[in-house]
Length: 288
Image 1 (cartoon, helix red, strand yellow):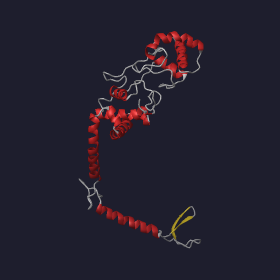
Image 2 (cartoon, helix red, strand yellow):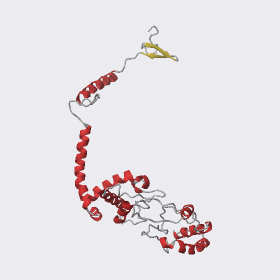
Image 3 (cartoon, rainbow, N blue to C red):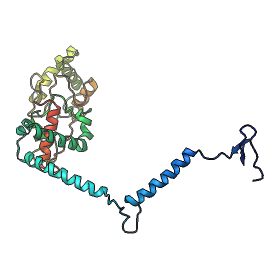
Image 4 (cartoon, rainbow, N blue to C red):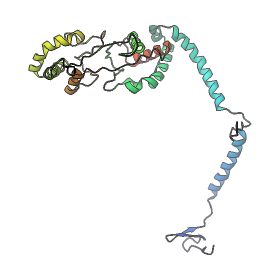
C-alpha cells in the first residue's frame, strides 16, 4: 500500500503493482460490465428456481416448471414411431415397384435409405455413393451385377464374395501371380485391353495378345470385351474402371486378379430397410 501513488499522465491512483516499469492503474470496473455481471447472477438465480439445476446424491432439483428434456425426447420419439409405423407397415407389404410409383412411400423409403447408407455404406462407397478406387461408384449407370431395382436389392441382400450361401460370386484369375501367363503375355494383354477401351495401343502387342484373350478372357468378358452382368464381369470397352485405367493399373489387375468383398446385409437389416436402401441407391443412380 505504501507504493500507491498517482499516475502523472492519467491522474489515476495506482495499485502499487509494477512490472518492467509498467504501473497498474486502480481504475474502477466499467458500469456496463458491473450491470451485466449482476444481471447474469439474477438470471442464474431465477433459472435455478424455474429449471432443473442442482444435482443431488440420487436425483436433482426438478424446478417449478417441471421441464424435462428426457420427457420431451420420449414424446418426440413416440410421435416419430407412430408416423414411421404406418409408413413402415406399407413398406413391408409393398413391392419395390409399388414403392417407386407411390411418391409418399418413395420419399419415406429414400429418407430411411439415406440414413442407413450414411451409417453403413458410405465408409466404402463414399458420401453419396460416389465411390473410390476399388469401391464401386453407385451414382453412375455402370453396374457389374445389374442396376435394376431388383438387381440392386439382390446385391444388398446376398453381397458379393460374402459369406452368404447365395452370394454373387465371380473370380478374376491372377494370371501373373499364379503363373498362368508369362510377364510378356501379361504385358501384351494389357495393351489389348487398352485397345478395347478405344485408346492407342502397341499394335504388335495387341496382335500377339488376341489369341490369349480368346483363350483366357472371352468366357467372362465376351468376344468384344463388353462384359457380362450375369457373371459380374466388367465391360472393358467403356471408360469406367474399378481399379484404375492406367496401364499399370490394368496390368496389376491382370497380374493379381483383385476382387473386393461386398458384405451381405440380410442378417443385419430387416426386409423393409433393405427395400429402402435399394430404392435410395436406385433413385440416386437415375434408375435402370
